[in-house]
Length: 246
Image (tube, rainbow, N blue to C red):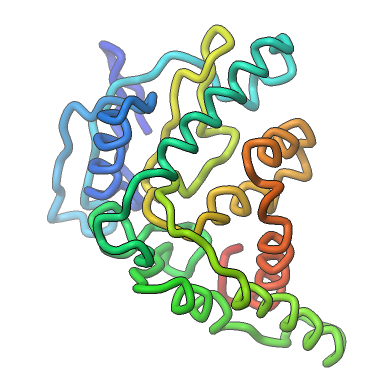
């Protein structure tokens, strides 16, 4: 990410894609505070970083940098605004079928949690969960009993059924911008797409214990509904430590 004059940014990395262009444009058109895509470039001679995006800079600082300095009323306003944003996105119909897990274009989703940073597309949650469990191994366990208990905990995800909803995909504290006590932007839409509804919350909750106030906010925004999913994901992470970046 390079800052340019006139309030512009150039994003050019191995994760930048046309899906990010389309997702950023779509959410901005829907009224969600996101950068404005000015133009994008296709770099066919650089397959490892084939797309660049020129976009506007948004006002504000990362929520994590200002959270401790906010007044209670400001914190409440930010929580309310984030709730509206999430509820809005999660209400959008999936044009590729209500059960399909995919990017905004209907293809694979970029996710740093996965090998090669891609996952899907899948026509059902069952296929998606099977993929998450497909690399399970006992390599990181001290005993067969511990391995089997962890596998049983991870496989509980197979019993849980969810709506497939549009998600940011990396709803982390550093991707939320705040200005004058209000949400001024959500940035980095490269992982956006349709996921099982728990994914938006369990993704940041895996590490949020290091930031108690952020964890509390995630739980109040809806993360409290997915305690079983988080437990299953933590088990899957242990089972796939040799393969997945969880």
